Image (cartoon, rainbow, N blue to C red; front, side):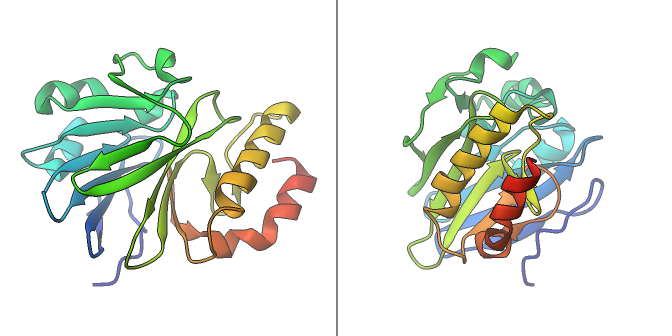
Length: 217
């Protein structure tokens, strides 16, 4: 079946099968958070993006083995189940170096802009975006047999950048980083997997950049 990325809390996950990577998207918790399980086809090594809530659902999705849990940013709704998932699986924790102090579960691997994070034989590039939080990160997978796949946390959604709560400076930095590190760096085909709600593409959102800048959110 064709991947669509439209999942809901209590419903089944959606699975995208790429040549080297399998992506499973599941919605959890009262804020409809998205969690993404990445599995390397060659090694079966797995990495979870945002142990947001509902540890039993996440653990059922993960199965028997999990190497790493990456938290995209410090907001509690994105790591509410982290302690239980890590205690059960023994996975190492990773987060942006400027947000780790805001996450109650200790971070073992501090990530900086431009770092490479591996899941088996698959490489993910870390991008640091400032504005939604000081240390939010985005993960980019450049599929050698396809297009890029971008896990944006709460930095980019269909229809705009993440919430900056009316702070003009926070919006300015987030808009700048989203523009430079996503829209200027990636083609229209790049697929965006946000921290809540439906997926989108860089091409679908690119025509609206000026509109977002003028409205200030």
